Image 1 (cartoon, rainbow, N blue to C red):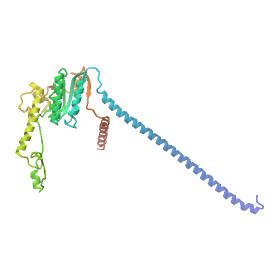
Image 2: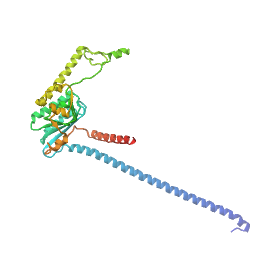
Image 3: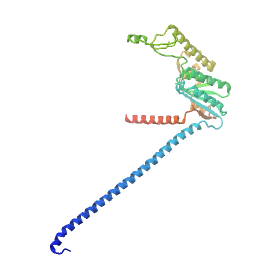
Image 4: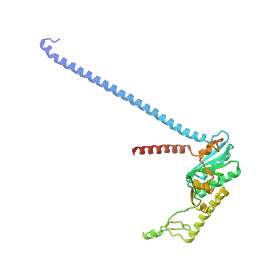
Length: 332
């Protein structure tokens, strides 16, 4: 209370200003509290999201490990069999070192097959255009060797699209060859290709610098002319390899081969023609044989050993390729 009325009147605006200031401070405090609450909620939400991310990363890791283990276990389980079995061996692709059909990998498989006392038959699924005559010869010899040691175990080759050149070289070692009517069979020959561009570089004004020790060391050099002696020498190598191929086919097929002049000229025949010429025995396919001729045997699948990481990489590569292909087709 003021001492007089005038002082009392003058003091009221000051009290009003104080009240307004306190009101503003109260509002600011509420805003700060609200902001703290919102920021706190965001921090909690981010922590929650981070926890879920970590959780799902562990889930993905466990799924990946599960895939690795399942591929590994499944591949190992393929060799497990119960009772008498038919060994199924797939030869698909080019033949040669570091190729799909590598004798260094497949001969040990044949050793494993015949070491298994439950093996009562061998079924080779063949789909190869050929390749190295050396690796083809090694596999041919291995099959013939085991046929001699175990004559009671039949070896049957089921041809899919191709059993040509080295592919047929190997197939001819079997007791029986089964083909589809449209399979391509034969190509009993040897080929060596190249080109000769010595005149071309001469016209271009290019001089060839080639140093050798041995006059025939670079006889296959495409930028140097080939002498008549070198041509004859290389042709004799091809002829000798061809002769080995012919002898192997004759030994494997015997008197089933027809007297046909074009049989060993490198010509390719259809499955129907192959049966007529004695290059194959009858029509059929692998699954049909498993359901009929080998129906009383348990199929045991043999594949070249691969490191677990190679199997996973291959599987992931196939899935990735399939996904990309589907995506590209979706854009069309």
